[in-house]
Amino acid sequence: MSHPSITDTSGLDLAAIRKQFPILSEKVHDRPLVFLDSAASAQKPDAVINAMVHTMHHQYANIHRGLYWLSERATEAYEAVRDQVAGFLNAPSREEIVFTGNSTEAINLVAYSFGSLLTPGQAVVISEMEHHANLVPWQMLRDRMGIELRIAPITDAGDLDMDAFSQLLSDGKVALVAITHMSNVLGTITPARQIADMAHAAGALVLFDGSQAVVHHRTDVQALGADFYTFTGHKLYGPTGIGVLWARRALLEDMPPFMGGGDMISTVTFEKSTWANVPHKFEAGTPAIVEAIGLGAAIEWVEKFGFDAIAAHEQALTSYALQRLATVPGLNVVGHPKERGGVISFTMADVHPHDIATLLDRNGIAVRAGHHCAEPLMRRLGLTATARASFGIYTVQEEIDALADTLVRIREFFV
Amino acid sequence: MIQTVPDSDALYDRVIVERARAPQYAGKLEAPSVQGEGKNPMCGDKTRVDIALNATHIQSVRHTTRGCAICAAAADLMAQQVSGLDVAQAVSLSGRFSAMLVGEASPAGAADTSLGPLEVFKPLRSHKARIRCAELPWIALKEALSHADV
Image (cartoon, rainbow over all chains, first blue to last red; front, side):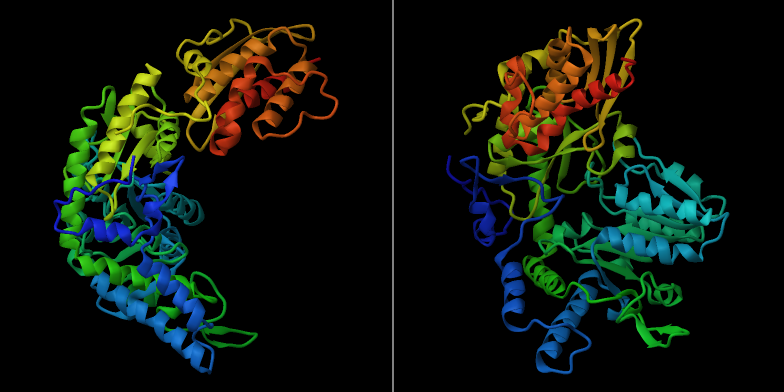
């Protein structure tokens, strides 16, 4: 089989886009790579790879401290990404953008720092569909600070149960609602604005874990009514090791530093130190300089296509995939949320998800299988694991066909 | 587009698929001498092993496995292969099985290098992420045998 021909219904030039991802021309087990695991980590376009290589070839130095040309260039490039991210999220101010290692670190920052301001008797609400990154930090906060952790249930279809959510807020004890903007298992896009309005009416702040969501739709933290928003670079076609916390400036001003060290200080004596202004108060130590520049390149690259076109492409692809998967004998799609992004989890009668993933891999098709770092959700769904196909800007219909056709043969092999 | 489910390394040998589908040693023992459990937190797979001991020998083995085909078949073939062995022989076989999966020579002093039907798992050497699936029942076995008073 040759590499997939391209059926293009989106208005995006998918053939041209795919050419910008060198890895998509690779073969796996002598078959063309069909990469359907973008929700775990997306592939990287030349624009990102080249920006990082260029930085290391021509303008690499440590930032914020070197009194020489190279350091100034690197500092400018790094800080320019802060402006870009602010624009990307429609944040009111560049000072509200804190660079972290990833979304997990951003959530931990909020749990430690904002969390240290909470008092016993207050509560944090998360949902049943959170992955471990937006669950474990809050459990740790609960155990450290004596706050209550409440879990908002989901419906069998995979949507947040809004009545139950409302009940959890009703006693006025909730200080923070921390919830995914898009589920990495069910694909559910949560009604963020409604969640924020309900949280605020109950006197709570709201954090959205946007790692999955920012890839698929335009993100406007002001329109969403968010107080905190987190995402990670590597799912947005950028490098690993760089993530973002956005928070309203007043919150960042009130929050104590997360980690101490260089760069986050104003003055230091052996007796006492004072903190740098936001966001530097939260960026101790030498940051991921090259990775931040790679993130900037990724944002520039994605924005060039426009999120309207990206969302239309991924929606068409997801509808097509749901139709094709419905024809595979014994296949069960997990969750049917009202609004979903390009993530489809499934199980197949008589075939374990790991066997599915291994045999798909033998055909060059990469999917995720397991509990997707969302064990409590698996338990809620009565499953131990699922297989998951997830799509990116470069995914094409022919790859969905390869998936569906191969799944049919895998089932025949096992039954 | 794709004609078969190619499996060039024959990972899913027919024996594995058939043992997973129709296990011969699945179930529980009424009065096991010892029990052990293996869990894989990465996938949620779980296997429980019941062993009846007769003095120092393994008289019978049953397993309850919730897992993939590799794990389920490994549990069934393990039960078959360790039945009748003494505890030391079973532990030694476990070591040789693990060594085979990672492509090492048999541990020094191992008298018998043939692993018989267990050799169907040899292709796992090129599927490192799945080795844990085949080892899970043996982890349960070793836990069970660690409780044996011999």
